[in-house]
Length: 396
Image 1 (spheres, rainbow, N blue to C red):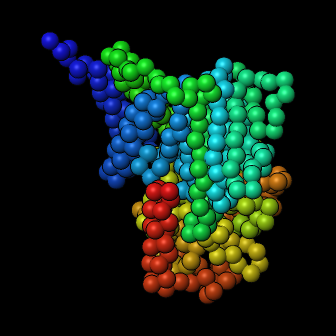
Image 2: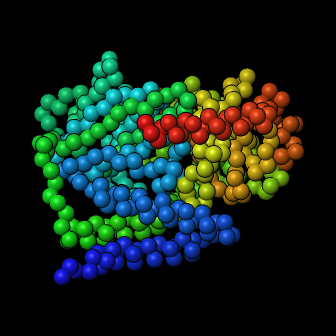
Image 3: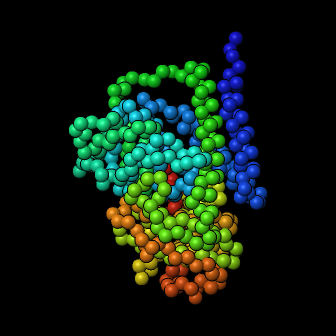
């Protein structure tokens, strides 16, 4: 007689029930739409948690897409492809690939995962300027125990190393091409992991449930650490991004705007940052729909005014301007600017200035208002280009 296989899923089913309660009782939920978005966020979190539990093969690792349009978390950057692989500090891993033409490619080693009480330590973080790449764009990196003569592309795994994260960042969605990346554990080529038995599957369902609850609790708490002490409708000076991305600075804030209001965010175009981008996020701490709406812009996508500054306009109402960031019904949310692949530290003068005005006043408050106007047809073309670019990226 076959054992009741449904008992294997019980821990995960119980975790989903607890997760649903977390969503329903989230402190920022005020409307039915807030709750519906929470259920949408829950679905993506369920999918991601199962993927992470089943991809946990430290001796036979492979990169998985940790965040995407349907598995959002942690104010995911619309311009970034995120990949991660589970590792351990006593093995050597070989990472091979081809450098694409994206604005940034970075690597980070973490000792753990994000939790409701702390951000994991970053044991190493660097971009591809720190490695040797062939003329054909190919590279090979080795991550492992300390060596006497490590060579230029060897990186020592510190004690507790548990995850390798790779970020590939686009600035021009239309022209930049993603590269290739893969990972293997040295000494396991041609072998295979054991076939999972009942105990292994039961453990995976249990782990998936723990990942799900930790993920939700963490990113419901995350904004309290970095946002809620800030006055509403302001943004911070540029600061090194928490979590150890040494070549990234960010400016963050949270907004609250009526239908008649607009926030003007004015920031200099930074010549020392190959990647500079702004995005909006919901109170679930995930990106807004960046495929079918313009809820993010990079410096390459945005209009730069003749004085070298970029003026973004956040509003619910369409102002008819090329740098409009759509609130898509979110009168409250997060706004963040990132600068990446920096060769210097940023100061207050590199950061944004913020002003809240009436939408009807924009023509008087924007110095290059007429030059920044777009027609409905031009706007539709911009959205179509976004849809096409994301479709190509997801299949790449």
